[in-house]
Image (cartoon, rainbow, N blue to C red; front, side, top):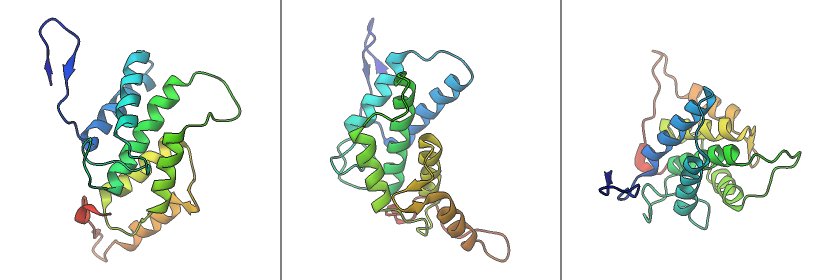
Length: 170
């Protein structure tokens, strides 16, 4: 990223959702250690993911891309939950409505496929489950179904079939 001389403005180019999620996870780790993360940083992350989300709740690999990868939808959704949680300091027994998260969860549930063999998608499902605290995505007990699918891919020699971003259509 190139910073303009003497300014705070950054030229981010066209960042990808795959790498960008790790920035959010890094800030979450910092906050979990008790180090203050300014609200402006959380707001920037939140805005990035909200601007990248499509009307159907999915996310593309890069902003404006027409591809749809469930692994990146999971990355985007998990990356929405984290800054939203950090920015929402209002104490309530009822979660506030959030159309982006609701739409993202619906997209994740409708395309839920723990048998895809895509380990990156499985990682993304885990991130959404941890970030959201949800046991179910739609009617799917995500952890049980993902664990069963993973165990079923283990061979007699202990190795696992599947791959990273299998076919890009997990």
